[in-house]
Length: 618
Image 1 (cartoon, rainbow, N blue to C red):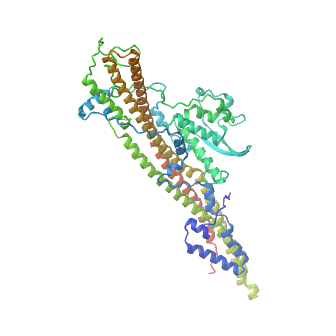
Image 2 (image 1 turned 180 degrees about the horizontal axis):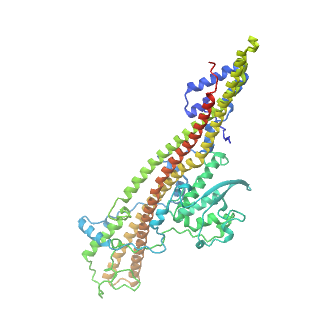
């Protein structure tokens, strides 16, 4: 069945040549022929030549079927939804960090001391509490970003538009989500909510609005800011939200969003995602009454830190310990003389240096101090990849567009050939002029009939070729080009994950330096209180409380940074598998081209068999 999406300008017209950069001479020759044919009054030929203006074009068909990807250059990342979310949620980091040179490692501390201390501290492994969602290698190994035919996860998700609802002021579009996902009993989904009645028991269907998708992605940004969160298509493009092309782009973008979301080992298990995919149609009402937890994934999680991150204030806290204190036991001396162990001071300088170097440490090997440098380099390369990939997509789209435009000319050729068959019999009819009924004349008439009959087969060949190309483009559009965009979606997700990571780095560096300042000031105040007898006990206790609270917050920040970097490393392991989308994309593209080329070759071969029967007059 042919596809009628043609609404745009003819690519062979003057306007169309500007859009497609076609040779001017070729276009001029076409229009010149059409004009001369019309002036000569050959009505059938003229009418068919007018198809150059009357037939809808392949260029517009591709516009309605495909969503072009604009090259990402310079600030091109700002065109995405995620950029707006970051801008709306980004903390104010403009405060200038104070000079903290005294917190740095002193120049006369040698590297052997650092190596010895770090080697010693490496003996303590990080112990992660049970409540932290830590991936196993099996979970990462099971991740497969490929489509259903190349994946064993059985995930199938479709998003379809359903008729618009008329609101009091505006219309809005609803989306029917159908999926094959199964969720365990731990999500406590009532049977009535698992699937609508009288439906296929293997398929769950729910109805959502775009605003529900927007709510979900913002919730995910709050709870899982350091995961690969899929990119949500914008609410509006440059055209009207009622535009058919725009609505198709948005529907497909929503489908890819859900597909990537449900592939993720952590996000797919989030209770809010499960509810989004299972709660029946009144999701807005569910959100009003649901008890929704929006804490960040790693908020409040404490790790058993390695020794290189533990400040030793045991000499300050002598005689103040209780059973619940986190500080190490030391000699239980009754009086304090204000002495400071030089080795203890050097050790704390090493600890502060380790804390200052925390962001530079690789989550895989703390001795590698190039983590941030490597992440920044990766992001630069990601921008170049994005720019190159978007240009590749545009070229591939253009290849298909031009081949489809050529197939429209096949239809035009077929129509012209039919017109030729109608008029050539009259031109080559000898009876009216020569007034002869000889056997030769009858033979010539018969040969003309055979020629016209086989030209009819040629005409059918070009009609079938056009239909075949339309079918091929439809398949490539639904499958191959969506795979192109899935690859794009993943690198967009990685870019904005890196951006969130770098924003978090700026925030925590500022907070950690502020906490270190408070700790040093509190230590100095406690020393002064111990050395003076006129200081009140309440003043002394206040500084001790400041010290313990600041050290606790510092440990929490360090714990979160370690968890965030480990999470980022796991996300990168996931992203490594995205490269296999490239294999799937080009395999599928050329598989479809090969399939339809073989069918086309069959058409050509059958036509050649008929062409061999055309008389040559010898």
